[in-house]
Length: 155
Image (cartoon, rainbow, N blue to C red; front, side, top):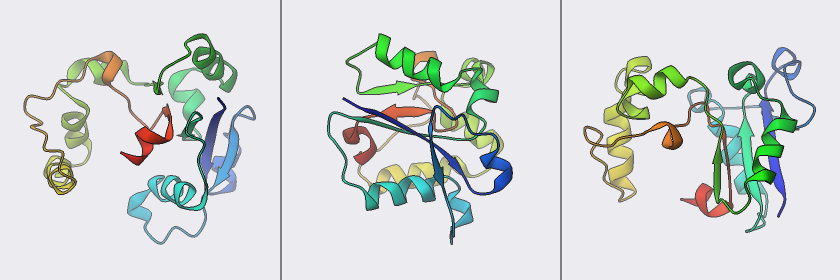
């Protein structure tokens, strides 16, 4: 099993924030700025053959600032807890405790997000009732701080 954690950047200022323990991954020429980091993540998966037993993650440059973790600590956590398909490193514990789920929290920051997410999940045949979906601390993650096997990313 290999662990491939990339840190996304799109300019010199964000490149300066990278942790050298992660793989630097530059996102250039994003014709869909509204996709933000999704553009780079999607591009990676379209252009690379994945190893089914390996893990892949795509972190923002602010990972250390937001989680207070270094690359060394993130890799150490994964190595000390083998066997999981998905590992999460979620900052913003307060938001995890104050909202029923991550989608309700997102609605506070991005008005209209719930309706868009509902439509999206219905289109991919995963209907979710966001009024009853509950995320607790172990099932909450913000900022795409996810390291997972290809099966997770494909879904």
